[in-house]
Image (cartoon, rainbow, N blue to C red; front, side, top):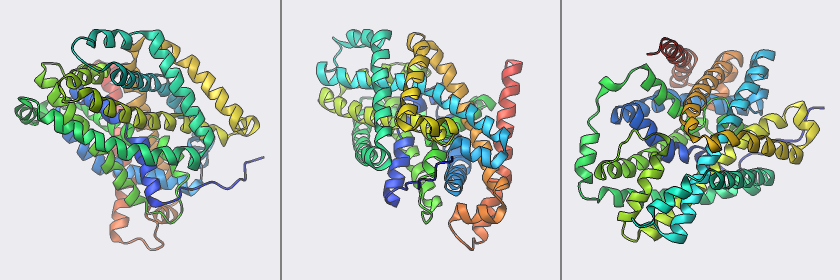
Amino acid sequence: MPNSAPVPTFTSFMTTVLTLLGVAVGLGNVWRFPYMMGTYGGSAFLLVFIVLMIVIAVPALMCELALARAHRGATITVLHKSFGPLGRLLGYILVIGVLLSGSYYTLVVGNVFYSAWYVVVHGCSPDNLTDYSQGLGNSGLQFTVGIAVLWAAIFVIWRGLKGGIERVSETFVPFFFLVAVYLVYVALNLPGAGAAMREFLRPDFAQIGITELFAALGQCFFSVGLGASFALVYGKFISNDTNLGSVAILSASGDTLASLLATLFIVPTVIVFGMELNGGPTLLFETLPTLLTQMPAGRVFGGFLLVALSLVSFLSAVAVFQVVTVSLEEEPIGQWLGKPRLLLLIGLAETAVMIYPGWHPEIIGILDLVIGSGFMVTGGLLAVLAITWSYGKSNALQQIFTNDNPGVVDRLIFLWMRYVIPIALAGILIATIIGAISGE
């Protein structure tokens, strides 16, 4: 029998925004964004990212939240209702993609927790950087920490929406922003940092091709939780009278601010100390220790920073397994197993999947581009099509804009959502696939 229990909703507008920020703000900003920027065009990537966030990601986020609220369902349920059996199959593929992304993402969160522990206990000085790096490169140790993060996330999900997810979001997100602002202040006061930033912020748009455009779009989707996954799951819990436009704008703004803060403390550090921005997924862990050795009271404030980053990163890890859990809970297998046994099964499956990237971290960059960008953009395209075409125009307008009589501006935005965004997403996806096949 289908589960007829009422769907819980967020307790307030602010709680809704903070929870979505807890999903969005984390390693996507501080770990992923700087290395993606360094690899795919530097400051030109940053500007393209901001433009795409405004014209594509914010309207797409409104679409996904509206779709989830309309159907009160997560990925598989929503796509099944929108596209029939094919949609259900696509939903399962996207959920499996999220599970796979969790295999490397949780390991990186574990790296951050290890770094926080090391700095708090041992400090960070030129004398112990080698010891820190050796611990970070110890696959068995990092796998163990990653497993601990996984099962802690499973526990928070078991506690539920209000007892677990809302409570940690309300605490962790503001704390992270306070510490990040201080770190930016320290980084920009390094000798030569101002000149380094001025030089960096001269964009070279000749570096931007279809691959870089795809990477920037994928970063937008990954960062705010788009892709018929995170936003769908959390949109399910948004009350009917919540203004989705305000939620989407505040969530995207907070997420973009976090990315800018990460840029402002990582870029000057990298340049001042002669490192390379295109260092890939290990960039964060190469730059932070060096910065902390130069910071006044680096052990204290570095410890605060890494603890704050650990906590918001943990929220993102919770979101990964929340997507899988809620999506499968709505399926017959989830209803048959019940939530406790389903969570146990998901935890055991993820433990097994984490083994390969745990001992082969070089695959993380490839997995992150394919799943973190490719799956997200594909899922986002499906979600936009579902709400703007499958749900019906009048119903979609009412659901997206929370208004029985949408005005001219609302209708123009809807036309943008219905025609421009799907064409843009499909065009970038197709061009990227063609480029990959041709080897360009």
